[in-house]
Image (cartoon, rainbow, N blue to C red; front, side, top):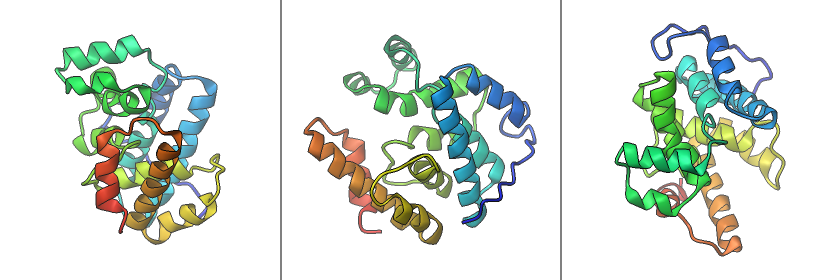
Length: 201
């Protein structure tokens, strides 16, 4: 883990503008609190991308857009679910799920980002998935262990993400499931799928 951040120069391959252009578009959609979190996630994602040899431009774009839709209205999400003919069961859930799964559709349509690795990383950044690319694992973990996070074990799992990325995904998934069980609310089936696949990594 290093404090040095090398921000990539965008090539127009994944987004038709500069990093600064994308930052402005994202900033316009979210609160200052959320925007500061997004920038911290990008820094962590770029550090992890360097460690695990993932395209830094993809890591930057996915990190900057992972919460692009986080503060959109329920009505916006429900409209996209209908318009895109997404799984109707999505309507049974809420922002926790929607801002990733449905938010990826908004990123695609509003920011003209179509790379499937990037969009899948956005879709999977809260619930994970049975199969996750290294980029998806990085965004999943960067969101969880960015520098502003403070919870029991954060230092341990932050280091684990640099030592054994798959194991850190399993660590996060186990602890997230424990948290959800303590709340005694419904658990999205995709979270259980992620747990079953990654808990023993």
